[in-house]
Length: 295
Image (cartoon, rainbow, N blue to C red; front, side, top):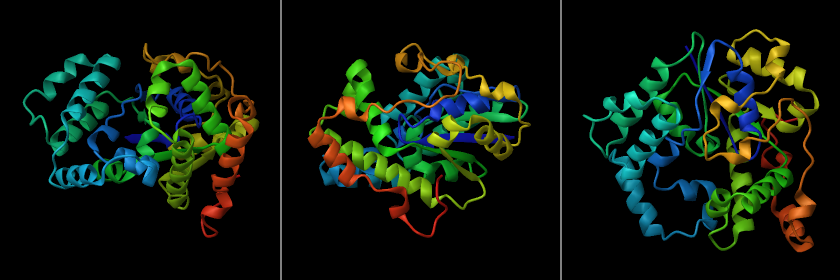
Protein backbone atom coordinates (compact mmCIF):
# COMPACT_ATOMS: atom_id res chain seq x y z
CA UNK A 1 0.00 0.00 0.00
CA UNK A 2 1.29 3.45 -0.95
CA UNK A 3 0.72 6.14 1.68
CA UNK A 4 1.24 9.55 0.13
CA UNK A 5 1.54 12.88 1.94
CA UNK A 6 1.37 16.15 -0.02
CA UNK A 7 3.01 19.03 1.87
CA UNK A 8 4.25 22.57 1.36
CA UNK A 9 3.72 26.18 2.30
CA UNK A 10 0.01 27.07 2.22
CA UNK A 11 -1.20 28.36 -1.18
CA UNK A 12 1.68 26.67 -2.97
CA UNK A 13 -0.43 24.26 -5.05
CA UNK A 14 -0.80 21.27 -2.74
CA UNK A 15 -4.50 20.83 -3.58
CA UNK A 16 -3.59 20.69 -7.26
CA UNK A 17 -1.09 17.88 -6.66
CA UNK A 18 -3.54 16.06 -4.39
CA UNK A 19 -6.09 16.17 -7.22
CA UNK A 20 -3.61 14.68 -9.69
CA UNK A 21 -2.81 11.65 -7.53
CA UNK A 22 -6.37 11.30 -6.25
CA UNK A 23 -7.66 11.18 -9.83
CA UNK A 24 -6.23 7.69 -10.22
CA UNK A 25 -8.83 5.04 -9.40
CA UNK A 26 -6.39 3.10 -7.23
CA UNK A 27 -5.97 5.91 -4.72
CA UNK A 28 -8.39 7.29 -2.17
CA UNK A 29 -7.77 10.88 -1.15
CA UNK A 30 -9.16 12.44 1.99
CA UNK A 31 -10.07 16.01 2.97
CA UNK A 32 -7.32 18.02 4.63
CA UNK A 33 -6.97 16.42 8.05
CA UNK A 34 -4.64 18.74 10.01
CA UNK A 35 -4.26 15.90 12.51
CA UNK A 36 -0.47 15.81 12.81
CA UNK A 37 -0.13 19.59 13.39
CA UNK A 38 -2.69 19.41 16.18
CA UNK A 39 -0.48 17.05 18.16
CA UNK A 40 2.18 19.73 18.60
CA UNK A 41 2.04 22.62 21.04
CA UNK A 42 5.01 24.25 19.29
CA UNK A 43 3.52 24.35 15.76
CA UNK A 44 3.62 28.16 15.67
CA UNK A 45 7.29 28.08 16.62
CA UNK A 46 7.95 25.55 13.86
CA UNK A 47 6.11 27.74 11.35
CA UNK A 48 7.44 31.17 12.24
CA UNK A 49 10.59 30.77 14.31
CA UNK A 50 11.39 33.83 16.42
CA UNK A 51 8.37 35.66 14.93
CA UNK A 52 6.07 33.29 16.79
CA UNK A 53 4.94 35.78 19.45
CA UNK A 54 4.49 33.14 22.16
CA UNK A 55 6.02 33.07 25.61
CA UNK A 56 8.87 30.56 25.65
CA UNK A 57 7.79 28.97 28.97
CA UNK A 58 4.54 27.90 27.27
CA UNK A 59 6.50 26.27 24.46
CA UNK A 60 8.91 24.58 26.83
CA UNK A 61 6.03 23.21 28.91
CA UNK A 62 4.26 21.98 25.81
CA UNK A 63 7.44 20.37 24.53
CA UNK A 64 7.89 18.47 27.79
CA UNK A 65 4.31 17.19 27.59
CA UNK A 66 4.88 16.06 24.02
CA UNK A 67 8.06 14.19 24.96
CA UNK A 68 6.09 12.36 27.63
CA UNK A 69 3.53 11.31 25.01
CA UNK A 70 0.71 13.64 26.06
CA UNK A 71 -1.38 15.78 23.72
CA UNK A 72 -3.85 18.62 24.14
CA UNK A 73 -7.63 17.98 24.01
CA UNK A 74 -7.76 19.80 20.65
CA UNK A 75 -5.86 16.88 19.07
CA UNK A 76 -8.59 14.28 19.66
CA UNK A 77 -11.24 16.86 18.76
CA UNK A 78 -9.50 17.52 15.44
CA UNK A 79 -9.46 13.78 14.66
CA UNK A 80 -13.22 13.63 15.25
CA UNK A 81 -13.78 16.69 13.08
CA UNK A 82 -11.80 15.09 10.26
CA UNK A 83 -13.85 11.88 10.51
CA UNK A 84 -17.02 13.94 10.11
CA UNK A 85 -15.62 15.85 7.13
CA UNK A 86 -14.51 12.60 5.49
CA UNK A 87 -17.92 10.96 6.10
CA UNK A 88 -16.27 8.42 8.39
CA UNK A 89 -18.29 9.13 11.52
CA UNK A 90 -18.69 5.42 12.25
CA UNK A 91 -14.96 5.24 12.88
CA UNK A 92 -15.28 7.36 16.02
CA UNK A 93 -15.91 4.19 17.98
CA UNK A 94 -12.25 3.24 17.50
CA UNK A 95 -11.25 6.16 19.67
CA UNK A 96 -13.85 5.95 22.43
CA UNK A 97 -11.83 3.48 24.51
CA UNK A 98 -8.48 5.19 23.96
CA UNK A 99 -6.88 7.62 26.43
CA UNK A 100 -8.09 11.08 25.45
CA UNK A 101 -4.75 12.83 25.87
CA UNK A 102 -2.16 10.29 24.67
CA UNK A 103 -0.58 10.86 21.27
CA UNK A 104 0.56 7.35 20.32
CA UNK A 105 -2.73 5.42 20.47
CA UNK A 106 -4.76 8.20 18.84
CA UNK A 107 -2.33 8.79 15.97
CA UNK A 108 -1.98 5.06 15.41
CA UNK A 109 -5.74 4.67 15.26
CA UNK A 110 -5.97 7.61 12.83
CA UNK A 111 -3.47 5.95 10.47
CA UNK A 112 -5.40 2.68 10.78
CA UNK A 113 -8.55 4.47 9.64
CA UNK A 114 -6.79 5.78 6.54
CA UNK A 115 -5.34 2.33 5.81
CA UNK A 116 -8.73 0.64 6.12
CA UNK A 117 -10.37 3.07 3.72
CA UNK A 118 -7.55 3.17 1.16
CA UNK A 119 -7.90 2.27 -2.49
CA UNK A 120 -6.22 -0.76 -4.04
CA UNK A 121 -3.01 1.27 -4.51
CA UNK A 122 -3.17 3.39 -1.36
CA UNK A 123 -4.25 6.76 -0.01
CA UNK A 124 -3.34 10.44 -0.26
CA UNK A 125 -3.31 12.83 2.71
CA UNK A 126 -2.88 16.51 1.89
CA UNK A 127 -2.22 18.86 4.79
CA UNK A 128 0.23 21.62 3.84
CA UNK A 129 1.35 22.18 7.45
CA UNK A 130 2.60 18.60 7.67
CA UNK A 131 5.77 20.10 6.19
CA UNK A 132 6.51 21.31 9.73
CA UNK A 133 5.96 17.94 11.41
CA UNK A 134 7.60 15.48 9.03
CA UNK A 135 9.41 14.05 12.04
CA UNK A 136 6.05 12.80 13.31
CA UNK A 137 4.94 11.64 9.87
CA UNK A 138 8.11 9.57 9.48
CA UNK A 139 7.77 8.17 13.00
CA UNK A 140 4.21 6.92 12.53
CA UNK A 141 4.31 6.22 8.76
CA UNK A 142 7.95 5.25 8.09
CA UNK A 143 7.24 4.13 4.53
CA UNK A 144 5.43 7.33 3.59
CA UNK A 145 5.91 8.86 0.15
CA UNK A 146 6.07 12.64 0.51
CA UNK A 147 5.46 15.13 -2.30
CA UNK A 148 6.70 18.64 -1.54
CA UNK A 149 5.20 21.49 -3.57
CA UNK A 150 7.32 24.63 -3.82
CA UNK A 151 5.97 27.82 -5.36
CA UNK A 152 7.66 31.17 -5.93
CA UNK A 153 7.82 32.99 -2.59
CA UNK A 154 6.34 36.29 -3.77
CA UNK A 155 3.41 34.54 -5.45
CA UNK A 156 2.79 32.28 -2.46
CA UNK A 157 2.71 35.07 0.13
CA UNK A 158 0.55 37.24 -2.13
CA UNK A 159 -1.90 34.36 -2.54
CA UNK A 160 -2.14 33.96 1.25
CA UNK A 161 -2.86 37.68 1.66
CA UNK A 162 -5.41 37.62 -1.16
CA UNK A 163 -7.20 34.70 0.50
CA UNK A 164 -7.13 36.51 3.86
CA UNK A 165 -8.76 39.55 2.26
CA UNK A 166 -11.58 37.45 0.84
CA UNK A 167 -12.13 34.72 3.44
CA UNK A 168 -12.52 35.28 7.16
CA UNK A 169 -10.91 31.99 8.13
CA UNK A 170 -7.67 32.89 6.36
CA UNK A 171 -7.67 36.35 7.92
CA UNK A 172 -8.05 34.91 11.42
CA UNK A 173 -5.33 32.37 10.72
CA UNK A 174 -2.62 34.71 9.50
CA UNK A 175 -3.50 38.30 10.40
CA UNK A 176 -4.59 38.35 14.03
CA UNK A 177 -0.99 38.91 15.17
CA UNK A 178 1.40 41.79 14.75
CA UNK A 179 4.14 41.60 12.13
CA UNK A 180 2.01 39.45 9.86
CA UNK A 181 4.12 40.03 6.76
CA UNK A 182 7.30 39.15 8.63
CA UNK A 183 5.62 35.95 9.79
CA UNK A 184 4.56 35.04 6.25
CA UNK A 185 8.09 35.54 4.96
CA UNK A 186 9.38 33.32 7.77
CA UNK A 187 6.67 30.76 6.95
CA UNK A 188 7.77 30.44 3.31
CA UNK A 189 11.48 30.49 4.13
CA UNK A 190 11.13 27.77 6.76
CA UNK A 191 8.84 25.54 4.68
CA UNK A 192 11.14 25.79 1.67
CA UNK A 193 14.25 25.08 3.72
CA UNK A 194 12.64 21.93 5.13
CA UNK A 195 11.63 20.70 1.67
CA UNK A 196 15.13 21.20 0.33
CA UNK A 197 16.49 19.11 3.19
CA UNK A 198 14.69 16.15 1.61
CA UNK A 199 15.64 16.85 -2.01
CA UNK A 200 17.86 13.78 -2.36
CA UNK A 201 15.73 11.32 -0.43
CA UNK A 202 14.24 8.53 -2.54
CA UNK A 203 10.85 8.65 -0.80
CA UNK A 204 10.50 12.42 -1.25
CA UNK A 205 9.67 14.27 -4.47
CA UNK A 206 10.02 18.03 -4.85
CA UNK A 207 7.61 19.59 -7.34
CA UNK A 208 7.89 23.16 -8.63
CA UNK A 209 4.49 24.81 -8.96
CA UNK A 210 5.80 26.93 -11.82
CA UNK A 211 7.12 23.90 -13.71
CA UNK A 212 3.87 22.02 -13.11
CA UNK A 213 1.67 24.80 -14.48
CA UNK A 214 3.95 25.58 -17.43
CA UNK A 215 4.55 21.99 -18.57
CA UNK A 216 1.81 19.91 -16.92
CA UNK A 217 2.33 16.69 -18.84
CA UNK A 218 6.04 16.39 -18.04
CA UNK A 219 5.55 17.14 -14.35
CA UNK A 220 2.51 14.91 -13.94
CA UNK A 221 4.50 12.08 -15.50
CA UNK A 222 7.12 12.57 -12.77
CA UNK A 223 4.46 12.55 -10.06
CA UNK A 224 2.82 9.43 -11.47
CA UNK A 225 6.14 7.59 -11.65
CA UNK A 226 6.95 8.57 -8.06
CA UNK A 227 3.71 7.15 -6.63
CA UNK A 228 3.81 4.14 -8.94
CA UNK A 229 0.79 4.69 -11.17
CA UNK A 230 0.65 4.69 -14.99
CA UNK A 231 0.47 8.08 -16.63
CA UNK A 232 -2.61 8.99 -18.64
CA UNK A 233 -3.92 12.32 -19.92
CA UNK A 234 -6.90 11.85 -17.59
CA UNK A 235 -4.63 12.90 -14.72
CA UNK A 236 -4.44 16.39 -16.28
CA UNK A 237 -8.19 16.97 -15.79
CA UNK A 238 -8.42 18.46 -12.31
CA UNK A 239 -11.32 17.81 -9.97
CA UNK A 240 -10.76 18.78 -6.34
CA UNK A 241 -14.43 18.64 -5.37
CA UNK A 242 -14.24 15.25 -3.60
CA UNK A 243 -11.75 16.66 -1.09
CA UNK A 244 -13.31 20.08 -0.46
CA UNK A 245 -15.28 20.58 2.76
CA UNK A 246 -18.17 23.01 3.07
CA UNK A 247 -15.98 25.59 4.81
CA UNK A 248 -13.22 25.63 2.18
CA UNK A 249 -14.73 28.17 -0.20
CA UNK A 250 -11.32 29.24 -1.51
CA UNK A 251 -10.82 25.85 -3.18
CA UNK A 252 -14.01 25.96 -5.21
CA UNK A 253 -12.66 28.21 -7.96
CA UNK A 254 -9.69 26.03 -8.93
CA UNK A 255 -11.01 25.19 -12.37
CA UNK A 256 -10.47 21.92 -14.21
CA UNK A 257 -7.24 22.57 -16.09
CA UNK A 258 -3.64 23.01 -15.01
CA UNK A 259 -2.47 26.43 -16.14
CA UNK A 260 -0.15 29.23 -14.99
CA UNK A 261 -1.54 31.68 -12.45
CA UNK A 262 -0.80 35.37 -12.43
CA UNK A 263 0.88 36.55 -9.24
CA UNK A 264 -1.04 39.10 -7.15
CA UNK A 265 2.15 40.35 -5.52
CA UNK A 266 2.06 43.93 -6.82
CA UNK A 267 -1.68 44.32 -6.26
CA UNK A 268 -1.94 43.21 -2.61
CA UNK A 269 1.23 44.79 -1.21
CA UNK A 270 2.40 48.39 -0.97
CA UNK A 271 5.78 49.29 -2.44
CA UNK A 272 7.36 49.28 1.01
CA UNK A 273 5.91 45.85 1.74
CA UNK A 274 7.11 44.54 -1.61
CA UNK A 275 10.58 45.84 -0.86
CA UNK A 276 10.66 44.16 2.56
CA UNK A 277 9.47 40.83 1.17
CA UNK A 278 11.95 40.84 -1.69
CA UNK A 279 14.82 41.62 0.65
CA UNK A 280 13.92 38.91 3.16
CA UNK A 281 12.74 35.99 1.04
CA UNK A 282 15.66 33.63 0.62
CA UNK A 283 16.33 32.67 -3.01
CA UNK A 284 16.17 28.91 -3.40
CA UNK A 285 19.81 28.71 -4.43
CA UNK A 286 20.81 30.50 -1.21
CA UNK A 287 19.35 27.87 1.10
CA UNK A 288 22.16 25.54 0.17
CA UNK A 289 24.60 24.85 -2.62
CA UNK A 290 24.71 21.10 -1.99
CA UNK A 291 21.09 20.09 -2.48
CA UNK A 292 19.21 19.46 -5.69
CA UNK A 293 17.88 22.63 -7.31
CA UNK A 294 14.19 23.12 -8.01
CA UNK A 295 13.68 24.16 -11.60
